[in-house]
Length: 161
Image (cartoon, rainbow, N blue to C red; front, side, top):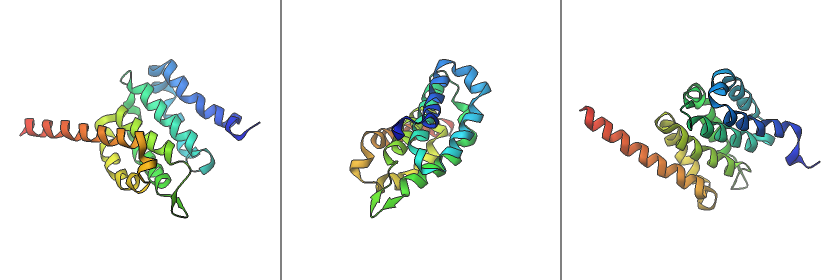
């Protein structure tokens, strides 16, 4: 059986589908355990790409029904793992999970908006060091969303003044 179809990887890929099936219940009963498990998985480079994709898909599914606030306590740890993955270089080339990490940054920016903004800002330098071919669609989407968030934040600040 190819490495891409291991039972362990299949279980990781199943988590976002469970979140999409019953997002409110998933957010209430399982989100914290699943994110803790995925953060543990992110420490093993062999499954990082799968775990980043699962986090992104879970955030998207939960944000669609307004249940994304459960991610907030984990954002610093998620950002740290993303930074590590984006910063890894082998012989001057980005690491193997850069595409999944960039996709995760973009989807989290789209799903979590202002909550993710400070973490997205901290990741911009790492994202730019991956090179234009790696940043691609997800990096550009993340940057675009970041600009939208910053613009709306400025409008709120001006309105409060």
